[in-house]
Image: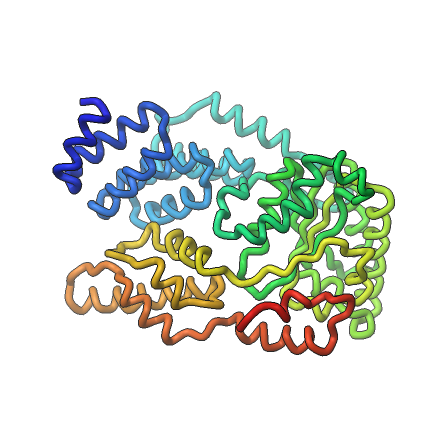
Length: 432
């Protein structure tokens, strides 16, 4: 039977699993991954206990570079102890696609330990080549390999389709200048530089930073507080200097500073050692603004009011973006992603999105986890496996207050009384 014949048969019997699987495999044979993905999702809805459907869907997600979705399913199958050698091999390929050679190697040898017949010299050679290509810094003085890497986790703007407004701002301020520099140069506008993102907790900051690096086809460095601070005098400053120097040498590079308020807090409220670090950061900032057009530094914070005022001056941060909590469309997509590997029935995603205004990723996570716990408890009592339904989630939503509301109560206070250089205008515009 060809595809059209199978579709006609399915129109008469839409819940026929054999026919649905035939259609899904036909799409796969023609490399039509988009349609194959839709059909395998329908198969999973029809038969949630058939883990083979999830396994094939994972392979499709890897082909489509939807790595987050693939990882969710693989973790689910590992928990179920299903075809572990095959799952570990897929995990290895998933990490290989993202240039994470350490995890790729680890899962490959886990798979081989379970089934030695799958040993593949060519694949092992590929992993070694990735390892060589990922060496970015020399090894003297400090071991930077733990947190400096080529952008091995592929996150594209297409994969975070629910952040449309934010993506458009970033494209205008960062992506378009890079893609069409001649237009911006005519207006004497900097292409690279410094970007400050501020928002309530758990609204997707790391996801956005990685997506920016991928869209710019640049290297990505993720810096946390522990990567900088050192117990010895001046060592922290040396680490900062070396990170920036190596980033310039290997430009184009995106450096992402997570929770910058911990590193760039008000000098009047910090110890002498932290003040030295802040001064070093300011020096690097001024150096970049005058000497380098291939370095983008992204600062992310939940508490911008704690950042030293020297960092917030307009001539330093010429790109400042407020990231609001997920909007209705975003919340709907988040529920779909979070529930994609759960046992569910007739979920009304639009209704859930309407009832979770101001909820963050973490708040939605909590709703789902609480609902699952109640459903598991009910299943244990009745000895019947019960799917998660819309009403279960709505009950938990009523019990949870969005964590972003507390953040906004503090933020609006600063926005009202300490709005230097119109820094908090977007917070004042946000309706609670």
